[in-house]
Length: 416
Ligand SMILES: [Zn+2]
Figure 1: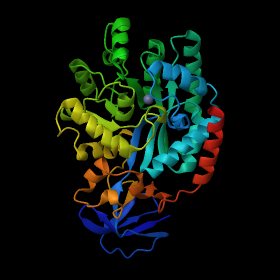
Figure 2: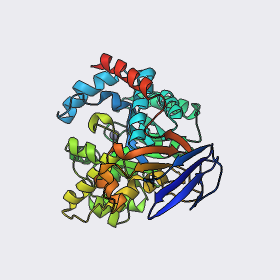
Figure 3: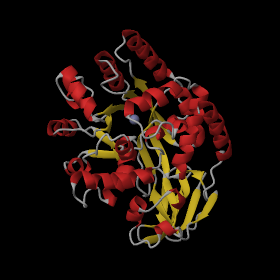
Figure 4: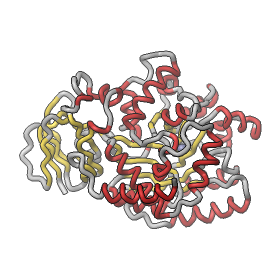
């Protein structure tokens, strides 16, 4: 399938963009005279890189709005965990599709997921046309029987058929140092190295996590993870809110990727990510929404604005978390962390992109489109979404949307 987008705004210029059958931007130039399977009129639209959500629990979209405004532990124990215990592969399949629908509408084409029932998750993502890294989650609550079972299930995950290797990759995840034994973390590290997989870990989300780690191991979670060999360029740390100077040195030394999740951190009063300090020191920063149970959506547009505002209040500096830096974290950096040759609109790159409606009031006036996207836009500005050279949404229409909403409502009626 080939796509020709005519007369679209790219930077300061109106150009034609031709996407070849290989799913890459093939030609970008004025007045291209090329035949294509689909021709899109780009008049009054701008083309931008799509977003990559580097930390989420997609199927938790089905838990959106349950038990809000509660203290963390009572929220988890009363509202979330009892319902998650009832989740089977069918519920997770539709929950993942519900999140995918929302992500596509808000301009996201790829995400890093940390949840259960990976077969159902991969099937849902494959059918939605998105990209994703699907993680197997190592978590044993320090119970030896669970450690053994998790090791066996990891092997099953590794041999699980990937229905869509072109768009889906497998990661390993360690839930957190407070839920996962040293033995299982070491196993995850060795397995990730052996299979050249990335390792996705919740780390330093709350002050309590750091204090408990200091009490249990005599060091911070970052120093503990370093000791277990878990920090390397293959590591992605979600949250990373509570870091001391030594932690930052360790993160920089090992080339670790960080993923900030400002909405979840603000809602649960976890704290504010040190965006400016880490960015200025050269840390590699991406952006994620966390799950919809603690956000309550998976929109990277909302997340960009909150990341910028959180960076400013945390540092006391209004120049912190500039629109350009935040947009880069959500696009180019996210693509690189997922191992994709994407994240910019340029010939030869993978064709992941958005067309935004320049007649939407949120984008008028358009003095600075990146600033508008970070501080002003919501999902209503996104007109068309392309992933891997395929249309996921055209003129705000997504195939199969009605069925996903019908199924999600049916499941929610039972969860209520
Ligand atoms: Zn999370």
